[in-house]
Structures are given as structure tokens and as C-alpha cells.
Image 1 (cartoon, helix red, strand yellow):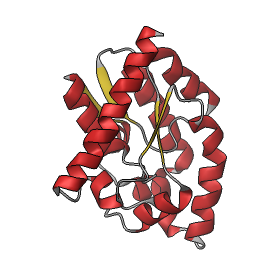
Image 2 (image 1 turned 180 degrees about the vertical axis):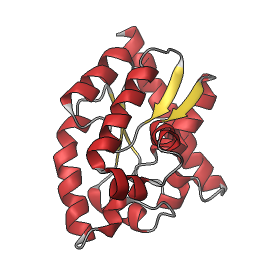
Image 3 (image 1 turned 135 degrees about the vertical axis):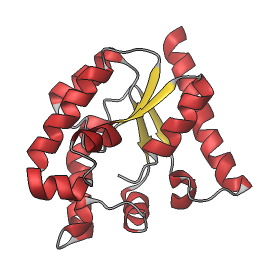
Image 4 (image 1 turned 180 degrees about the horizontal axis):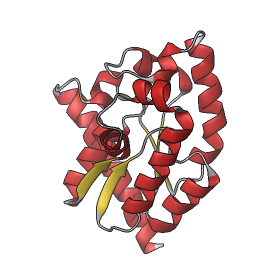
Length: 180
């Protein structure tokens, strides 16, 4: 949540000349374009998570693409194993305080923002997910880029440079994986 997965994913796909998929978008489409909070309210989080797993399984049948997954997609052993076995998993890292600040100032409607103690709920969710995120093949810091820059909301030269540097670092680490 708030790491910049969609923005960086789109830029990485463009740099690699590959198709881009956003799993949240595909899940939302499957639920008749309901918002994520509405899916959670009407269908429940387990139904949303099952749909994420099905979308991921379909994507794993393809090749030569970049996908941005929702923050909860890869925090189950079965989905993380599927992703690790079928592609390169990238963890866009930032300190929890930076991520929380990005999320609360985001234009996206996120289910966690409806929680009573939003900051505590965010911290607990992040901490529960961190062990799964650490399994990623590549780890890249996004904490030096501002939230608006990561979200793609700002188009200043500095914002573009921050995003370009993150993409360049991902490509460098991917090249290292291939040559290792």
C-alpha cells in the first residue's frame, strides 16, 4: 500500500517494452467495476482475495509482461510461491511512516482507511505482510521519492527523475539476476 506499484510497474513495462497488467484493476473488472471497498463490503475480503489468486494464476500462464499486484496479493504462501516460480517479484520498499503518509494522502479509496484506528491497522497489516514481501527476488527503495511523485500525480523533472531512477535500479537488479 502506497509503494508506487502501479506507477513504477507501468514505467518498467514501458522501459522493457512489455505489456502491463494491474491485478487490482482486473479483479475490479471481474466484480463489475465495483470499488475495492465496495467489493469488501458486499462480497467480503475472502472473495476479493480468491479473485486475486485466480487473476494471478491466469497471468502466470503468460510471459513477457509486467504486473502490479495489490498489497495483499502475495501475502499467502500459495500466491507468493506461484509468483516466485513464474516471474521476478519486486518489492518496492519504504519505511512504514512514508507508506502510511502516502496512503492517507492518496486519491485512491482504500478499505484500510475505513478502519477505526487507521494508523494502527495499517501498521499491523504492514508488519503481517513484511515477511512475505522479503521473499521477493528484488528489493528497491522508493522512500526518497515523494508520495505524489511515486503515485504519478506530479510531473516535475524531480518526480520523473525519481521514478526513472527506481526503474533503472530494478532493471539493473534484473540484469544481475539473469547473469548470476
